[in-house]
Image 1 (cartoon, one colour):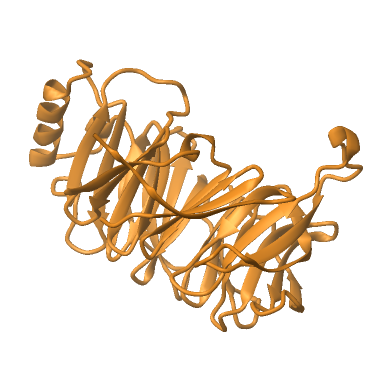
Image 2 (cartoon, rainbow, N blue to C red):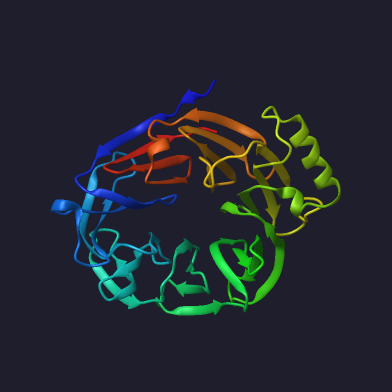
Length: 340
């Protein structure tokens, strides 16, 4: 039976939360907005706020108006100078705003291309839109490179060990995983061909990438394909194919005939968007299903722990860093501890 995760603290907030940021050090970042009377805004971009909270106690350090509001594409995190970076829509198009971590003072602003999803690296933010991937230097706030190829669409990107891994699709409709160089943006290889029906999630930690997907029989080869067939046949849900599964690939040494590991989660049909997601940190993979959190070793797939996390099934956002889970509900922020 799973144990209930230890809650370090919880705070009710006088704002509607729509995004969070946490790293191994420094404060917790929370982005939100105030709902107007009647719930209507005259513009497409909802005015935002950004705050910092002490990671140990939950006490508010500061809360200031933020030019970046609520709309298409949003990311918040820490840049190379340990300063706060917020990316997203504003009344003047998409921008990146650099702010002081101590006070929330605006230090710099730059216009950037429209994006849908972004991931922070050590010195760059990697941004993904349907037609291109681009890298934003966190020192200069300038675009370092961009990548696109005819006939490809992009859905998510994630930096890993000198690469940027990209979930992509083609006109044929399937999804796969490709790798580009994180310094130059040059194409490196297709790690998984675009034959999967959908990739629900991509995370990376250490030198391992893990995908939450389905129908792995369409891409696996050799002994890995045989292992998948055995796992499906033995799965207690009694279906005939994997309808929800995990596959782990390292950037060196893995192949579709020898991935690091695979795990079949479901063999019965489910809704278009299953109640499952993944996150990763410090060599651990976290699988979220409803209000239950499973921790696994990202390299081997070995189970490390299972917890019930109150509110996880109603989350607005969720992140894990350095053994702490940051849970954002609509008007509340909580930090939980996981000793896996």
